[in-house]
Length: 273
Image (tube, one colour):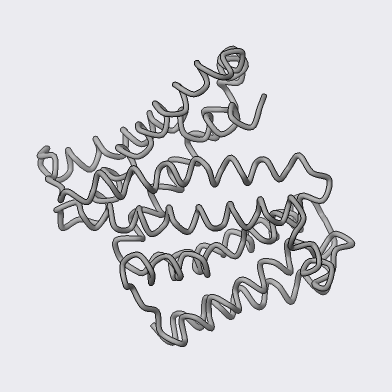
């Protein structure tokens, strides 16, 4: 399957689950579809397209042998989200929040390269390499998407954060699927059969992707997008724990330090928040 086909699965197979969340909360809140401000459509569309491109670039890094470099640089996403929020909507973050972002990013990048021969020195030197540029580009677009989704979700006129998140998710994922489906039909029609043949694992991808996005969008209505991204770095701790407890992999020092830094960054947010 091509990178485009794999990217499509992330969105196309998530539609049933996104709509399910929307219908559940719609019924729970009385069955009336919330109204939205004009900015909703624009911000959700910008965020949706940015997320497609970000996912595409991230998957593209896996075609390189040293894809770890790209993965590490993609983890600068919280910092880039903070920059976009400041430039586009004037959203400022406290000094403590900036420190928390920096600490957690160092921790995540450290874990990303902990099981390779890549050091922090070579990581810096590789900044101009294709995987690094793809990773940075992915992080940039994910940051733009986060800010866009926060603005879109806040444009939904409803008191319940879950409803705001579900409505934003439903619109965005349908738009993303239609855009990608059009592209595949025009440019990569042979991918359609491969996508259909992979429907079983694709449904799992769709479920977890849609559920994760629902969590993201709901959280964006409650806090700055960059700070939400910092807390979400806890995903690396779960990934790390899985490798240790399920796959019995040994822990090395950089991984331990990385986990401690991520935890410290998250704890710092609670202190300064």
